[in-house]
Image 1: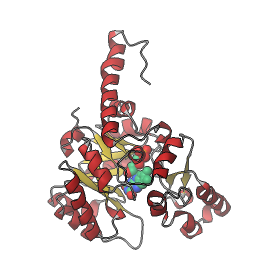
Image 2 (image 1 turned 180 degrees about the horizontal axis):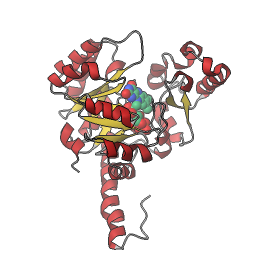
Image 3 (image 1 turned 90 degrees about the horizontal axis):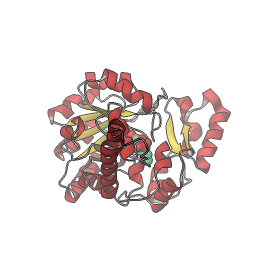
Image 4 (image 1 turned 135 degrees about the vertical axis):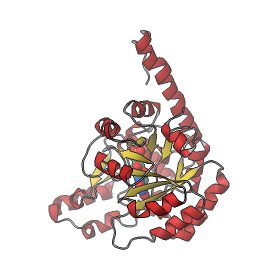
Length: 333
Ligand SMILES: Cc1cc2nc3c(=O)[nH]c(=O)nc-3n(C[C@H](O)[C@H](O)[C@H](O)COP(=O)(O)O)c2cc1C
C-alpha cells in the first residue's frame, strides 16, 4: 500500500509505532521497522543524550530500515537538554522525528537543517494547523480514545479525523484506538494516510516489557481505562489498578485544589516498576481504550502483516462487495 505517509518516511506500510516511555527501546523500534512500519525510539526514556546516541546505534545494529525518535516536550520547569538530544538524533543519522507535548517550533530549524521529517502529535485541529504552519511534514492526530495524553477537548477520532482532513494540507495519521485492519481502513476512509499505534504494539513479542504488562493488556477490556489529572489540565488515559483507584479518590477529595504533589506517589517513577519489573499496581501508566481489541501477543511482523492482509480483504472484498452487490451478507469480524 502506498500513501503520503509511506512515501514521506520511505516505509512499506502506513503504520507507525508511537513513542512510549519505557517501551520504545531499540528492540521494539527495530522490530516494527523490520516489519515494514516506522519504529520509534522514545528519546526521553534515555536519561541522557549520550544514552540516546547508544540506543540509536543499538537499533541501527538490529535494522537497516528507517526508524525514528520521539521527542516529548514536557510541561516541566526542569527541561531536559533538548538541543543535545537533537544533536544525538542528527548525529545518529535519524531522518524521522515524532514530536509531542508542547509545540516543537523552537527546534524546527535544527531538525529541518538536518533533513529530518517531523511528525507532530496533536489532539486538536487547531494544534495540527499550528504544526502545519511551523513546517511540520505530517501530523499524528491523537483522538480521545488514545493511551497517554488525549488533551482536554475530548473529541473522538470519528469526528477529529474528518475535521483534520477538512483543514490540513499536510498528511496525517490516525492515532488512538488503532489496532487492526479495520482501524486502518477506517482511518484511511476518514482522511488519514496511515495510522499510529501505541498500546497495541506493547502486546507484541518484541516489546521489551515485562510479560505481566502484555498479559494485562490481553485481559483488559475497553472499559478498563481511566482519565487522571483532569484538574491539572494534564489529562492522561491509564489502565485501572489499585493505585489508580487511590489516585482518583484523592482527586475527588481535593477537587479543583489538586496539585501534582497530592498524587506524587501514584505517578512518580512508576514506569520502570511497571514496564521492567511487572508491578502492575505500582501506579498510573498510559493505556488506550484499544486494550479491548487486544486479544493476543503476536510478533510485530505477524501483527503488521495481519493488519495489511485484513485491510486489503476489507477493501477488496467487503467494501467492493457492497458496490458490486455481492457483499450484503459478508461479515468481517
Ligand atoms: C505506555 C505508553 C507510554 C507512552 N509514552 C509516550 C511518550 O513518552 N511520548 C509520547 O509522545 N507519547 C506517548 N504515548 C502515546 C503513544 O505514542 C500514542 O500516541 C498512543 O498510545 C496512541 O493511542 P493508542 O494507545 O490507543 O494506540 C504513550 C502511550 C502508552 C500506551
